[in-house]
Image (cartoon, rainbow, N blue to C red; front, side, top):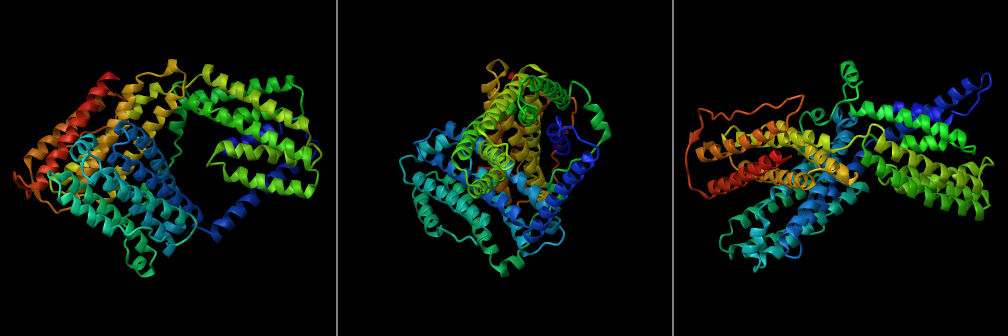
Length: 590
């Protein structure tokens, strides 16, 4: 951010010839503006310290609600499971990114972590339970084709679809209310629906899987009701947050000189991008000198904003910039041409300014669309706003966009496929650690809540990174895309595996089981071995992977019982082992 700010200042002053003393005045004005903005930001954060956290948390709650509404499609025959899987993976990326953003905002705020008020504790408690709800929603994962085949002629599926969809709607409404700083109120009383569902399930034969789904739904609804209860002051005072060591849930950036020096090589994507930016900026500057116009530095600004390390990101930002500038330029031209009253123009200026900065992180196209007329109207107040300025702005943006796009393809390009193996390996390691944690539950050791949630967070982050990498590769030229079907299948299988493991952990967490079933240990060891072999196939220069050893405590009681719970765990482990084997096969092909 500091380097980008320096580059922007240099570009804006590249054609300015300072007289004696003007440079000092310029620096003072620039510093004064920065200090004023910093003071304003600090004042706002002190006045409403939790507003940003509320906003990001509300968005996260809504995204989880959307995920559940998508998942309800598994219980209808109108949608193909494979299509739903693809949508779920995309939505899962969004949820994981939003979760990470909430952690950054929530757990790096000292007012929340050091001296938490009731509002701070409320936000932390909601986020903790929301993560559990999301994991529980992932745990409701089964062979949906088999479920449709077995129970498609009953009313159970439609009832399940309705309840899960309503839960998603409930969460969306809760997110809206949290975002608006309002006390959320429940829309639906789920008790009658759950009772009716229980009666329907009891009338169906071989209903073990349906009972498992019902239990998961009860747990999710119970969590939602717990969140509602936090808004009652007495309940909030007695509630205990399960999020210990909050700082461990946030990624920290260490400034390492050795790491910096190691990246000064063409093997580093960041170094190649830096050289690319330098070369392209020189080319853009030379072209701006050839083209007549008083604001040709807009070419350099466009290059700086559009050019990204990955080709796909540069391509996406390119289209967004062009569309926003063209439409915004037309809007600005119409206002300058038809609106001559300065008061009216000033009102438009304020509207466009607020819109530009409000949508900067939400929707870049809309942000640029507002930013362009904002700049044009601002120039009109200093006597430089005419239609020639509009034309110059659009032409310079198109030139800068063209240069940036060509450079992304030909000058030290960075394609996604060579990096995919690292993302796949990291995702396999995260799943391995997640399954190893489940193995501790099978041996009767129990779960360390903090360590378990850290493992879950790492899995979520790895899943989001993997899916994002695939999306970036799909936006690259066809000639640069390799093993697309295999990678897509790998992501779906990984999502399936993590869901099965979540289901297994949820089952193990329901009881204080100190008995060890050797059959379960044998299956989970086989699954871990297959994941380990897949990880070894995707070799990395920095091999940080360590295999886990499953040790059975001497105090554990070894038994082989043919109980309902034991059968269910065996079935879930078989699912896990099968998917682990499929992941190994896919890894061999890539």
